[in-house]
Length: 586
Image 1 (cartoon, rainbow, N blue to C red):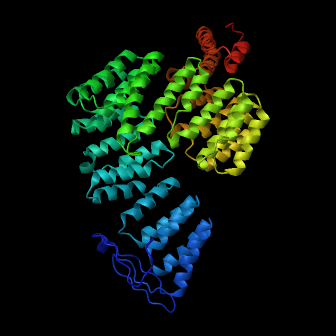
Image 2: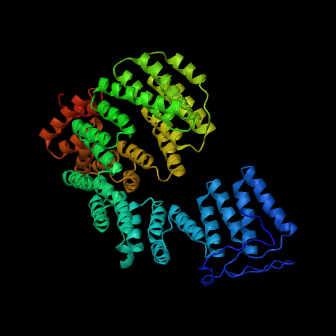
Image 3: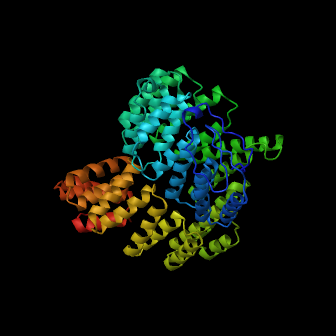
């Protein structure tokens, strides 16, 4: 914030004359001069100086609420938008979204010419779930903007804060309804992203292709047409991506997304051939060596992957020798290669070699994670106490690393069946970092394993309160209620909220199928579970799908599915329990 001064510089904006700031009430004994489109001319009195300094001191002591509450009335009295802006910063620092929205309203009121103020007001309105008038406000901002693509992207940033993705799409539709705006490629790209987030991939692909038709060389449009088109018609999506690449062979990102899809489809030879062609076209792109190693690893070709990583490491070592320390990303790149080499060693059963490989990581940003992984591998060898001792001697550099250390310790204790110790570790972590959703979530999962359902509910509700966008927390709580046949309407509402955030998540689709089953809605349950199993054919989803089909009377298909699930994971408790209850032999 600029200091208050009798000679404060004006905020210049050509639109200011159209939107004069509202008059500030006079303060006894002081004369405040309001100037259209400019900062108010405020005599810097002892009272103002004291209140500003007091708020800053309060903020430095972590008392963000009192700091903001000191500035808000002062902003109203002086008509100075900088004070409202500073109050907004304090409220955000304190995590008070409602208070931040109040401050943003005041900032926008005092500085109607400031696009940053109106953008903050809209974004915080979205974060607080206040959407009335949002579409009209965004539409007006876009229409008046000189740079409309940037304004459209800013509008997407606002609506992306909404938990309800379908509502976000409707708002973007209305915000972009002006025909002159709607024909812009940026509008189609924004609607493509909004439609995908809302689970409407057919609309997402259509909008991406509209953008591509308007700008045939647009790689962002081609990327969306491929990524979103995979869910609609993968054959057409990949063919169109190849057509674009034939016309635009240097579209590197699209090449790599296409390679990623080939890998996902198990077409490893095609993926490697594509990467090889890219390497011949741009031989100086040494990162392609690492990507080839990743594909070879995914294909189970561990020795070729190791050889490629050796070449890649040679290149990174040459880069490090030929440049000043820190001048390149060679250290981080080499560390990525060591991580993958350690994974190859691990897969080949060479755990000691994997631990040694992780010890070669020099990048400070990756060193702590490597040491945590070493501890996990040591524990896997049966040396739990040695692994925990390594954690004791591993120094975290910041709070994020400290949280990860607690989570790793609890994982090692859990895997060693030291459940009480694992829970004690997470409780200690929760006291140290009470506002960390990851800790509470893991603690909930441990309590679920011990059947402490009331504790699971309590912790997951706290996770949701801390992170209202956490789809997995809504899903876990909803599934827990449904699985115990408890509060089914609330379970349905929770899982619906999770689907609004992540419409295509197979695990959330599985939960929706399960709660529908518990509510006796067999046809709808079967459809959700069919979609979930098509995306993620895992044993738990298989068992749920089979049980619904059995209840519908399709015993033959249910039996086949259960045997399929048992073959995938013979130790899966959900599959085993379902087999027993239905009297099906594996």
